[in-house]
Image (cartoon, rainbow, N blue to C red):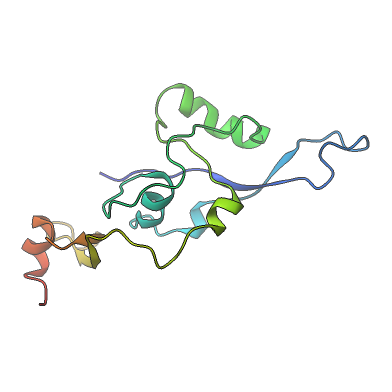
Length: 146
């Protein structure tokens, strides 16, 4: 079963908080969907702890929706959060993203394996793998190289 990922990138309007601007302080720049492969949860494990197969220490897990979220994004996501359908709702700032060291990985992470499901050949799976590969990967791709 997959995990749906919804949201967007917002920026603070440069004139928010001034006397001559009365619009929303946060403006949606774009939705997230064009930026990720929907079968690869690595970034969402690192950022939010979602499908965290590699065991990263999540940067910004379970914060909920930001208090100053744009009205457009709140209208889209708020009802799902209220119904409990989006229990992993969170957010991260650009400063926090900039602080991530791209060379840091969990100790037990050794690589990534990608395979196609035998029962559904059009379904591609990709997963970060620990030293001991998951049984479902071994049954499909065989023993890992030494």
